[in-house]
Amino acid sequence: MKYIKQHWQLFLIASLTLGLAPFKESHIIGKIKWIIGGNAFTGEHAMNLLDWFDVLLHGTPWVLLITSVILNFYSKISK
Image 1 (cartoon, rainbow, N blue to C red):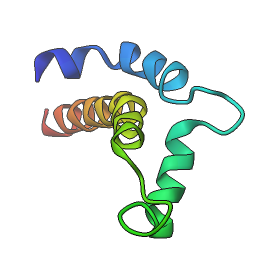
Image 2: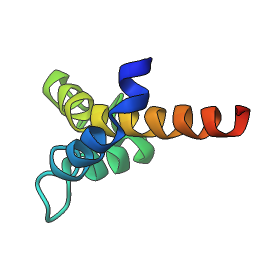
Image 3: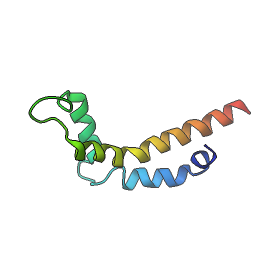
Image 4: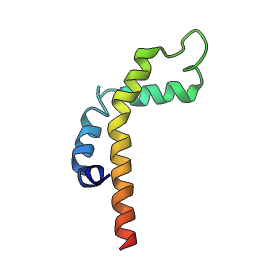
């Protein structure tokens, strides 16, 4: 947890590069729309394994950044 808390700058850079790539409409935004639309799990155009890997690849920097921000915020409040 200490690593995640201390390296928020790295996670910010990763989120803005890998997390938003490609930059026209990023994969993560397209995949989130796909999941929210309800067609990700069933139907003719359901997401396959490669699509779920894409969500994992482009979403991980965002999860780490949000976790780091929350940990830093919580540590500042608890002092």
